[in-house]
Length: 188
Image 1 (cartoon, rainbow, N blue to C red):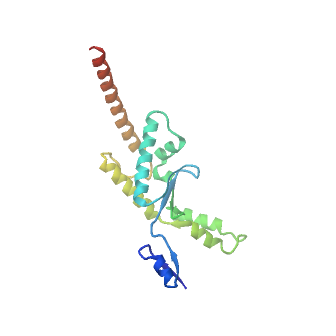
Image 2: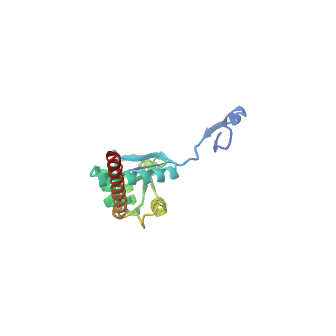
Image 3: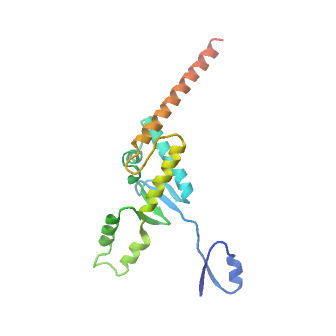
């Protein structure tokens, strides 16, 4: 008999009692990528995923301000969360039901093995609420930092502009401070 237990139990104690024990992790992990070759947050608990995404967005906006952006940064700016692929516990998360159903039909063709439907289900999940939660939590974080953000789903153009403007203002201030310091030390 196989007992599934949570991390609260001591598997060693259960094994000593003669039980066959399988320990399943209760930690849910997420991965976000722009494309298969461009993951920017991998196998992280949800809160760390959000932190990582905030940092990635910030660095993407700053790279754009200095004309050092990559195609992934521009994709994120133009398409917002619509540009990202989200994975939950290794399963692709789908937001759009018609696209999910279409992909399932294409995957489960008559010439495929009979377990193709099960294989699709183990690698994919329809969970639009995950994208809504991610959008809500990211938007809240940006608002807490003083940026006017409503939804990041359609695009991030407004957020990128705010971040770029803030960076340019701070760079101007730092430049003027440095000029003042150098002139002060040079005149002595």
